[in-house]
Length: 337
Image (cartoon, rainbow, N blue to C red; front, top):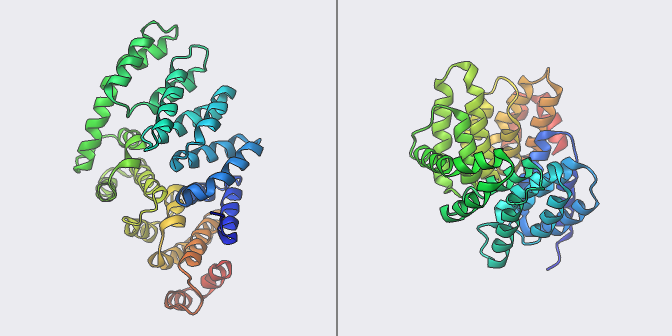
């Protein structure tokens, strides 16, 4: 089925944002293209084939990881052969196909990752990325790889595989504890576990975890709050990639409570799943950020994205409330919308 002109224009717009230097716009574009899904894959593949910029190729591979499209395998195979940072991103992108309902795609992705792990001529970083992509595979698969690597000439590869079962079991236990509200002492441990487990977790479980992380964030010393906020942002990013609004209230309240720049993950999530209730907090934050032009631009972009998606005009009640409180702000914000 051909893509409608309006949809094609939107896809081109988001792919163009992948090329930009604004991290919020780029993360929002990745999430939005992931939500668009299969309709965007053809355009993404064309953009990838013509791209010479490494960051753009990596961003496209991140979108393809979420798409689960079988054509990702051919792109990943070439990227892995080319090596470098793009190859590492390609190995990570294959992780999204390991659970594919299309059996041949899952098999091809698994075979390519295993071959990469076992290739002693491949770059160490690439081999480790491929090994990490297999972390959620059954213990039997990991055990066979570990056995094959016992004679590997790279001591770091052997060390990683010797610890893999223990690390995987520990991460599984940590993740299940966190789902039940028992958070670990270190934020980084939860963030690492979430990278491979959050994309398939139930929405309600992620919502509860966001609430628990926010509570922990408020209870630790100020110097450590950014670590927990980063975990919360990563969880919001995962929900945005899956187009879920179950935790929009936390995004809204985070904007309301902010007294400084918000992490890019929060603003990117607002781009994709924010709703009308987020507009007044964004306007207030825009006014508070009057001395930070970059932050104002990012807040205005999020406001614009929501207003456009929700069909908010100057005549809408929320626009009138913003105009009454911040007439200068609504002029700037609604001019973009």
